[in-house]
Image (cartoon, rainbow, N blue to C red; front, top):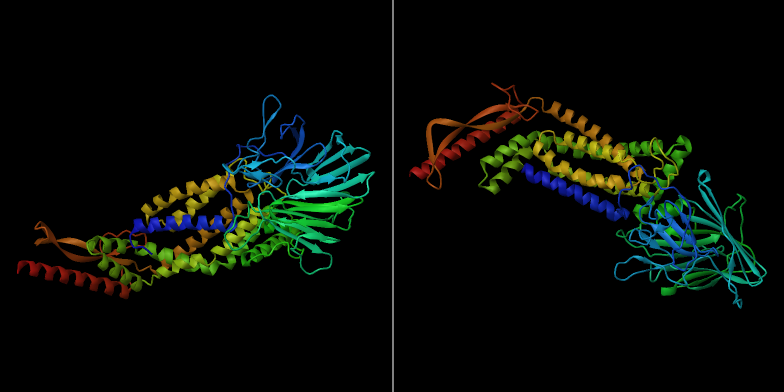
Length: 598
C-alpha cells in the first residue's frame, strides 16, 4: 500500500484498470459500439444483392450472425458477430441495404477471407457452404423463389430452397435459431444417385483443427481422410493457454440431426471426408436424404454447451477456468429449471457466489476501512518528514503495526478475481432467450441505457462508502467509472445486471465492515498537532528563521476530524504510542537546535 493519499488513489485506479484489462483478456471480450437508443434488432429475412451479380440473395439476420444464402440455398456469406445484437445491415431510403458494416471489423466470415490491408471480411467467389455437387452434371441450376417463414415465438427462421440442375431436383429446408449458432438442414436430391455436400472453411483460420469422431470411438481422429458413419466432423480455430480471444475463434461442426425439424428425432450415417491446411473443408458423401445439425459460430465453451456439443468427445478441451465456467453454466440451467426466470437466476447466482467469497472480501474490506481510519495520522507523518522519505516509510510502518493495519490484506482481493472473471465470461456468452422488465433480451445490451446509469450509480456509491474519509481519493477514482460506463452500454444486459447486483452486495458488506472497525476504534485515534512555542526560533538549512514547535495530543474522532477541546479517553496503547512519538520529535528538534547554536 502507498502511504500518500494521492498515490494511494492513483494505485487503486491502476488496479481497477488492470483488473478490467485482465477480465477482457481472460474472457476474450470484444468492445463494440452502443446501439441506437431504444432500438432492438428484429430477427428476420431480408433480400439484398451482396455479391453484386445482379441477383438478390436471402439474408437471415439474427442476434449472433447474419447468414447469406444464394437462390440455390448455398451459404455464400456467414458473418458471425463479435458483439451479439449488433445491427450491421442498414436500410436505405430507396429500399436497398447498406452492407458495409456487415463486412466490417465487427464480424468474421466463416466462408470468406480477410483483406490483408484492413483485415476486413471478404467474399470469395466459389467458397460456399451447404453446396450440393453432382458428379458429371454440368447443367446450369435454375432456382425457384425461396419460401421463408419467421416464427420468433419459437426462435425459428425457416426457409425452403428448390432448384433444378438438368433432370435433378434439389430441395433444402433450413431452420436457423436467432439466439443460437445452430442450423438444422434437410437436404433431398431427387433424380441422382451419389452426391456430395460441401462445407469449406474456416477462412478465418489458415490451418484449423480438423477432426472427426468415428462411431463408437472414444476420441476423434485428427488425420484427414474419409471417416464412415462419423458421429461428428469439425473445423475449429486452435485454442491454447489462457490468452486467446474466444469471441473471434471460429468453429464449424456437422453431425446427424438429433431432433428433426418437426420434433421427431432422426439418426443417420455421416460419411464424411476431411481436408486440412489452408483449403480445409468437410465433405459429406451421400446418396439419399440428409438431416444435419450444423454449428457455425464462435469456438467458445458456453455456446457449444448450450448447443449440446460439449457432450461429444474431443469437441472442446477446457482448461481449469473452462471447467469452472461449464459448472456455472450447468448451475444456471439448473436454477432456471426451478425459477423459470433468467433475471432471478442471475440474482440467485450472484448472491450465492458473493456469500461464498464473503470471508475473503471481509479481510480486504477491513484493511480498506483501517487504512481510511489512519489516513489523518499518515498525512501528518508525511507533512512532518516530507524531506526524509526513509523516515516517512519507517513511521508509516510503525503506524501499521500499532493500529493493526496489514497492507498485505489488500492482496486478498486478488483471490476471488479469477472466479469473478469466469462468472462474468460465462454470463456474457450465455444465451438467455428471455427478457426482464424493460429489457427485451438479457443476451444483448440494454437498448434504453438504463442499466448503464444504474451501473455507474452503484459503483459511485461503493466508492463513496470505501473512500468516505478521503475525498481526494474519491474524486480521482470516480472518473474511472465514467470510462467503464461505456462497457455497461455495450455488454449484454445479463452481464451488466450481474455487475450491478454484485457491486451493491459488496457495498453493503463494506458498510458493515466500516461500522465494525469504527466500533472497534470507538476510543478514537490520536494524532500529533504542531503548536508554536512562545518566542522560540529555529534556523533552518537555508538560514531562514522558523518557529520552534512543541507537541500537543488531541483526539481524532472516527470521522477523521479532531474533536474540540479535550479528547475522550483513548485506548492506552494508542495514547502511549503517540505521546512517545511526540516526545521523540520534540527531543530531536531540541538536539538539532543545539547543534546549530554550537
